[in-house]
Image 1 (cartoon, rainbow, N blue to C red):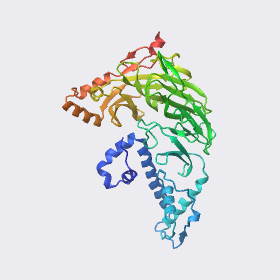
Image 2 (cartoon, rainbow, N blue to C red; image 1 turned 90 degrees about the vertical axis):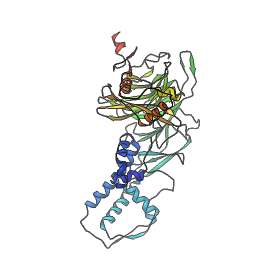
Image 3 (spheres, one colour; image 1 turned 180 degrees about the vertical axis):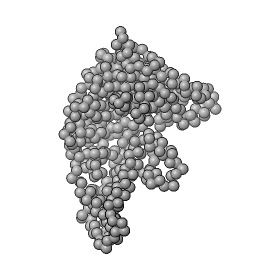
Image 4 (cartoon, rainbow, N blue to C red; image 1 turned 120 degrees about the horizontal axis):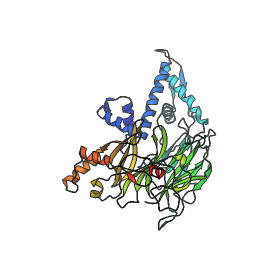
Amino acid sequence: MTHYSEHTLDLYVRNSGQVEHERAVIESHLTECAGCRAIADDIREFYNLAEEKEKLLPENAESREGIIIKPEYIRSHPLTKIHLQDSFPVRVRNFVVKRPVVASFSSLGVLALFVISIARLNSLNDTNPHKYVINTEANTIEVFNAENDKLWNLILVNNFHTLHGNKDEYFNEYVRINDIDGDGANEVITTLCTEHDQTNNASAAQVFNHDGTLRYRKELGKEITYGSFQYPNAYTAKGLIARDFDGDGKSEIYIGLTHRNSPYSLVKLDHQGNETGRYWMYGHAFGIDTLLIQGRTYIALMGIDDTQEERKALLTILNPNEIHGEKRGTLFKGYNFSSSNAEEYVVNFPRTELEGALGVPKPRVTGIVHQNSEGFAVCVGIPYGETLLGIVDFHFSSDFYATQTKLIDGAVDLQKNLIEKGKIHISWDERFKESLKKQIQYWDGLKWRDNPVKVGVSIAGK
C-alpha cells in the first residue's frame, strides 16, 4: 500500500487546488489506511485549534507590546531524529526551538496563540505514555505523552520484521500502549527485542511501566507435536492486541506465534503476564486483528490452511473470552489437545488461476478492510516479488453472508497481461466474480459447508 506524504495530506485538508485532481483517490485511501487517516486528523485538529483561538479575540485587536522568548525559557529535549505526529503546539514548539528570537507582534491574535502554545508546553509533567513511534533509523521505540512530548525510548537490539511505520505489511502492530491493570497509568507492551532482552528471543513479550522500567518479560514459545511431526521452540511473535474484552477493568494480551509456516498459536496472557489460554492451528496466521460482528468484538486470524493438499486462504474468528487453557482448532486434529470452544467462524476462500500462473501456491488472507456497521471485506492475495498483491476483496454482511466480490485493480492488470501471454485463460467477468463468491466455504466443526454457519453446528447436533 502506497502512503501519502504529510505535505500532500496538508494540501488535502486545506482543500488546495494542487491536489484537486486526486482528491477522490486520497479520500478512498484514507478509508482504508489508519496511518494516513491519523495524520490527516492531526493536521485538521491543528487548523481547527488555530481558528477556535482566533474567534476568542476582539476583531481587529492590535497590540504594540512585544513578547520576548529566550532559549532558556524553552523546555526542549536533546536533538534526536524522531517522527512526531503534527499538531499545533508541536509546530509552534519546533519553530521556537529552531529559531529562538526576540520578536514583536502587532497582532494580538498571534500573540495569544503563542502564549497558549507556550503554556501547553508546561504539560511536560505528564508522564503517562499515550503514543509511540518505531524509529527505524535510530532503531528505537520512542514513547510520547498526549502532548507529543517524548518521555523515553527503548533501544531495539534486533528486528525480525519489515516495518512500514509502526506496522508490517499485514498491518500487525508490535507495540501497544494500554492501561492493562486499570490503575490509570498506561503500560507499554512489545514483542520486539529490546535492550532489556539479553536472549535475543523473537517469541517473548515485555511489559514496561509508565516510567520505562521493565515490569516483566514472558517467554512464549514451546516445543509441539502435530501428528508425527515434532517442531522445536523456534517461533516469531507476529501481531499483538491488548484490550479488556471481558469488561473486568483489566486488559488481556493476545500474541500470535508463527513457526515459519506451521504450526501457529495465539497466546493469551492476563495483565500480570500469566498465560491463561492458547489456541493452536496448523497453518500460518500472518495477521491478527479485531472484527466487529453484530455489535460484538472478536479476534480475527488471517492466513493459510495447511491441512489440505491445495492450500487455501483461511479466516478464523475467535471469541476472546472463550480462549481458556491449551486447546486446538476443531479443524486441526493432529494436536494432542481437546478442541477449543472459542471458534465462531472458520472460512476458506477459493483460488484463482493467478496463483498457479505465478508459481505462488499459498494465497492468504492479507487484511480486513472497509469495516462498518453493515459489514466488512476480507482481502485475499499472494506474495508477489517483495510486495503483497491483493487479488480479491470478498465483501460480507454483518451476519457473515458473502454479498459481493471485487477484483483489485493491480491484480486485474496482471491477469490481462498473463492472458496475452497465454498463461491463464479465464476471463474475470461478472460470472467469474459470482463463481468466486459461491466457492466460499464455512467450517461447521465437522465438515465444510457452502452456506454461512458457525463452528459447532454439526457438533451440537450430534
